[in-house]
Length: 173
Image (cartoon, rainbow, N blue to C red; front, top):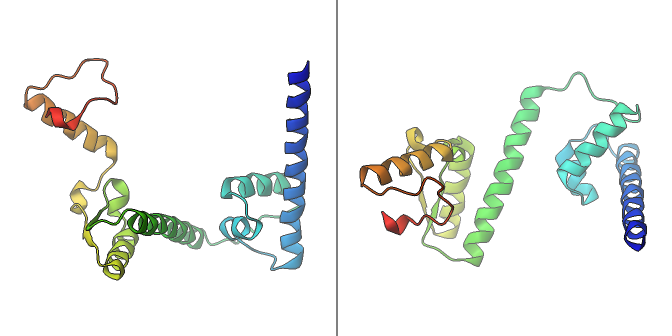
């Protein structure tokens, strides 16, 4: 019974917190410009983008906010890419500051991004770090890289167990 009361209090606080955040969100629109993106809203409110998106969607559905039908989708996409690059490059910079290294390696599908390649090159130049990027033809989804690594294992005669786990070490190759 005591546990149910604690759970009820927590969910009650969460609902009140959501209401308070929704009110804060609406206030931003009454105090500032009438159009603002999710990323900027999240930054101003100190909330996660997913939280702001969920709140904004709920407020649109309840007719408290209105979507702009004239939104330029290319502009939204460019803003999204810009936000992603800012986050990735900030994380790279912080990692290089915390764990000094001679080289920054960017791999996977994201390594094909011209914006990331350019931003990483600028970051590495500023920090005096070498940048290592795969050729575009090898900048693919990580699943393809895992498949290629498995192919190399099999070609070398290394047969992992059929129920392989994350403990398979590259040193076995």
